[in-house]
Figure 1 (cartoon, rainbow, N blue to C red):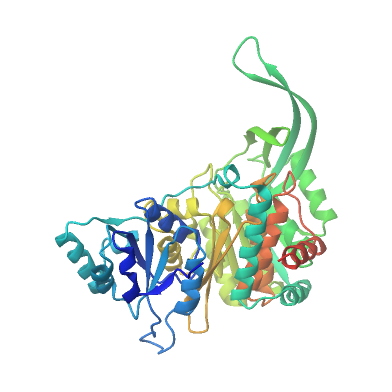
Figure 2: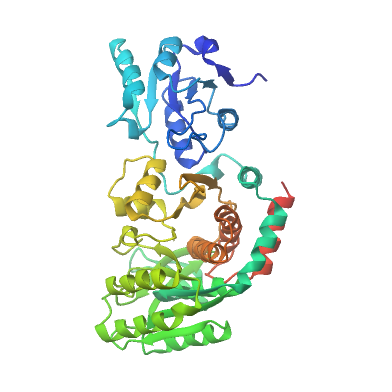
Length: 503
């Protein structure tokens, strides 16, 4: 089979194609969406790939990977028929040579195309050929299992994971040995504590009185969730951890206190008689969740309880390497507490890690400013930035800029996540990681486990991409059991060994 990578002078054979353009430093789900949409516009899809450039500020290579490496990654995609290697960024010349039926550009070029792209657009407009600006269709779920077997998908994702590790210079030994430093780390977790109850049921049938499904409850089990399970994950990984949170004066709070004691997690729980401990009950039939009932109060803390939390933070901060904020927007993480966290971070040189979950609440991750790491999902980022049309890459870059955070994990559900870091020059680099679990049993705990790994790893001076790779394996374990359960370091090591040794 001939290579899809060609020079511009050889691209005449693809006249009438759909032409796309970019540097494609790393191929992540945002690029796949864009290219898939472009492919749907015609029979042949050609990518005009920007050449190797030097940064005007540093005189170093502008892109993380060479043009040849980027072209090879694009060439592996079945939807791409050809990759045209440009010398620099000569899109106008490519349009003249290829004479495409349509040019599809990223949404980011619509308002500010730049001189070279503007010239190509004007040329096509004179010829009466369409130009389309599109970021690709946004989906928060996928249908891969409808067209491919679970075995094939699992194999493909493990290969993608191994390739991501190779690109970042990570091998099995580096990942496993870097986990040893976790035992010397101590973290504070602050946020909303939740107790999740799963009720296993048997389907009985339909009610005769109304169109209602009738189930019979067989068994129930409680799991601590929210900030409490993030602390539990951190402790199970070998690091020390203190939890600061608010609970009610009820039996559910006693359950949380006992779990913290059994797991040897520092108990910084404050009782608040004005609210019950947040409790969520899920009814499940044959591993299928039917619905959830929540018992909670989400008003902001009273000043007395707020001061008690601040006092706990001030007591624990000198002994810690970082603070993890797990905010479900139920009122615990107030503006005053965030100000205190920022002050303590500066005073004691602490790392800050933030995750705000607002699936059924109103909140914005952009309230976390200058954090070491943020871990939103795509929907939460779009809600916070009020932008549903921007491309995924620009969405991530915009969030980094708006919050002034150092690093970012952009979670993409069944598409995995993208890890963003900064190199020694302060430039943003990225690496996508796939979702290793193809057919998850319960996705509720994936984000909490990933946040715990990232906070533990980075606080122990572990490389960002190494932490992200381990977090990828951690999340795949978290979704394979019903209920949010802490994952021991030994189980995680075994999973990493299995994933990489099968490559």
